[in-house]
Length: 116
Image (cartoon, rainbow, N blue to C red; front, side, top):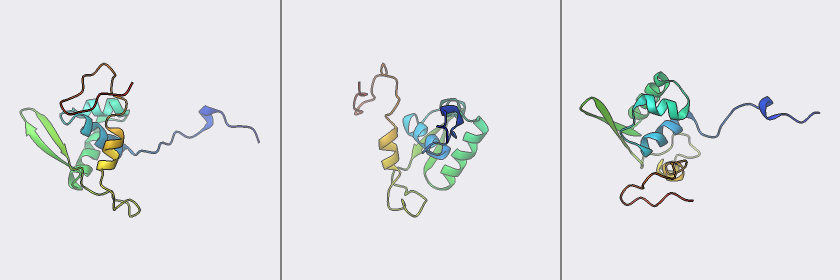
């Protein structure tokens, strides 16, 4: 059996789009849907549906501020799947929200500096 080439492998990932949207919102609570879509690589319409799912399930709240939405993540909300249901989504956010931030970005007040 021949070894598979990288392009022959499926393009699955460990994180769902829902997890990625939640992490992007945790990174920037004032992010626009089109910016989240561009960062993740999905459509703005898909992000809109995911944000609605997350809002309805209690993972985030939305407040209208002028013409923009401001989101607040509920880090104490538990994962949905039974094997992780005892863990808060804070675990995911803490693990990924600081990852891949530009190194030249200044950390927010109280935020640790980016590694590197």
